[in-house]
Image 1 (cartoon, rainbow, N blue to C red):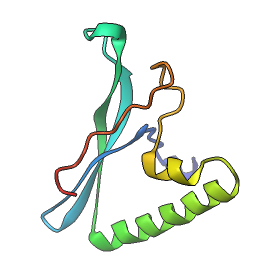
Image 2 (image 1 turned 90 degrees about the horizontal axis):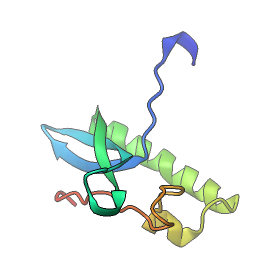
Image 3 (image 1 turned 90 degrees about the vertical axis):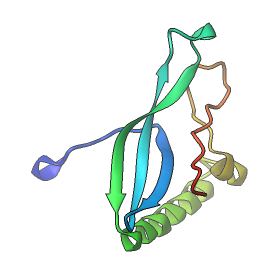
Image 4 (image 1 turned 30 degrees about the horizontal axis):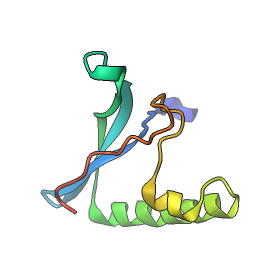
Amino acid sequence: MENGQQEVFADGIGEISLSGGMVRMDLVSLIGNQNSEGNKPRLVPKHRIIMPPEGFLRSFSAMENLVKQLIDAGLIRPNQAEGQQVAGNGAGGTAAKPPKSPNF
């Protein structure tokens, strides 16, 4: 990336909350849990994005536009955009569900 920008990979967004007037989004990564039966993968928070509500709304609008492009390109189905599956998670084709936020 240009200008020393840092890249961060995430499997998705976990909890989203509004606190202190700022929107806080936890980025989550899928990891295997060797201590659980069957080594079932789980999502764990890795990074947090904090932004003002106006920035969140601009980001949400940009994401909605991208979802429409992905549907138009045939990369995802409309119902998949709502149910959101994690592809290639190594769990025998079952989707890992992100943690539910108590704020929504």
